[in-house]
Structure formats: structure tokens, C-alpha cells
Length: 107
Ligand SMILES: [Zn+2]
Image (cartoon, rainbow, N blue to C red):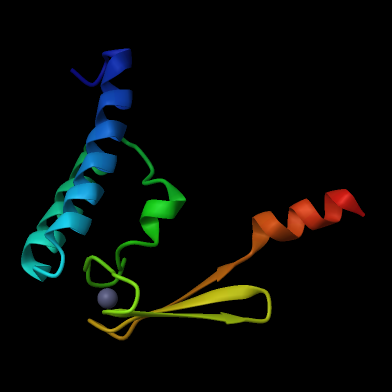
């Protein structure tokens, strides 16, 4: 099944769909977290990376779905965005690499 070239694309669609469902399930945390767990399972089984914009929607530490303004604090600091998961207290620092590269290209 995984050898089917269409399989990965299908799996990626399923991952996106699961994150949409998680967002819709919010604020039912258990349901949202279940969808996140499923999406991560699909990714793992298919050797897929979860797209970066979706990665920011869950905590790698505890697997919770993260909703801005609810259970995650987002701050910008210097050249990075700091995410703090309120469920487990984990901090994530995501640098603005893409933006920095884009700026360098212009100069
Ligand atoms: Zn967490």
C-alpha cells in the first residue's frame, strides 16, 4: 500500500484534514488532541513530515493541539517566535529563517 505513489499524497491530505478537524473540535481538547495524534500516526506510517505551518499547531512535548489565545502563548523576540505550551510548559523557539533569507536576497 505504501508503495503506491499516490499513497503519500493521500496521506498528506489526510494529515491536513485531521488538523482541520482538530481546529473544528476545539475547545474539546480531548477530541482535538485525538485528531493530532492520528495525524502524527499517519505521518509516521508514511514517513512524511508534517508541514511547518501545521507543526506549530501542536506541542511536540505533550501532543496537545495548540490554539493561539487559549493554550499557547506566542511572542516575538529578536529574530524568533517563541511558543509556549500551557499544557506542559514547553517552550519552542522558531527563528525567522525564511524571512531573513528573503531579506538577504534583496540586499
Ligand atoms: Zn505541551
